[in-house]
Structure formats: C-alpha cells, structure tokens
Image (cartoon, rainbow, N blue to C red; front, side, top):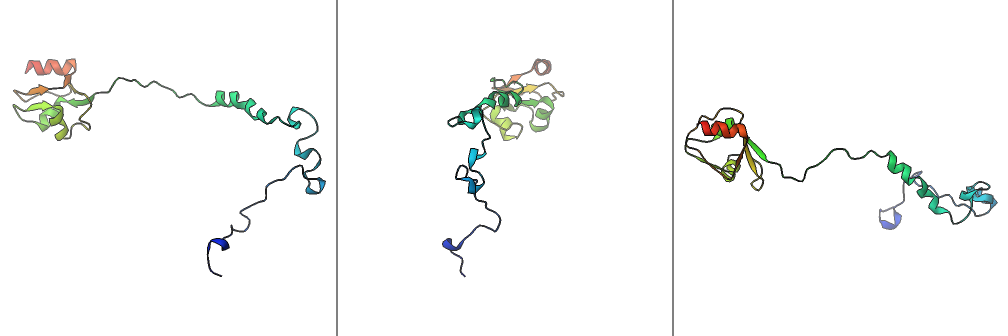
Length: 141
C-alpha cells in the first residue's frame, strides 16, 4: 500500500466519536439528554449561563503588579569606564561612547555617574548629562 493523501488515517485509539445527546434512548443519552431533571440549566435556550462565573474567574486571576514609568531611562556610564576607554583631550559624546561599546543604543539619553575617580584632563563632554557626584568630580579636575 502506498502512502498518499486518501490513505492517511489517524493512529488507532487516537480519535473518539463525539457524544450525541438527545437522539433516542438506544443511544444511552435519550431522555433528559444528560441535562438532569429540572432547573434552569435543563431548559432550552440557556447557553449563556456559562458566563455567570466570569466575574469570579477574573477575581481569581492575579493582577499585574508594579508600575512602569513612561519617562525614558538613561544609559549610564561611570567615570572609571571613561578612564579606561578614552585619552586626555578626547571628546565624549553619545557617538564616541557607542563606538567604544559603553552604551547599547545611540538614540537614548546618556548619563555619566560618579563611580571612580576621573584621571584624564581636558575632556570635552557633548550631549551627555551628569549626576551631581560626577559633576562635582569633573569640575574639581
């Protein structure tokens, strides 16, 4: 037997016939059609009752915690990184920091933090912001 589209069958035992209710007593699901005797859910046209539990389902779900600010985050560079990657008299800008691999994105703002001591002289900073500590250390130089 060759394999082709019309000969493909599901594996044995992998499929089941669906339960057909209300098709006579011989089917085993005749009288009352698996709905029980009386009550609202045994009547016809009451399929919307499934939604009754929606409020409880929503109440059980955990709320997403926390807060996400819409303000853009700074990419940070420390003074000791500037010492390691630049020379005296270099211009420190977003482009130069990106070329040296100190920041990941050229479009986001950059802030220089005051960790470490600045040993270089005559540096020119362009288009970057400073923390108060870093500003004090740069002014001292």
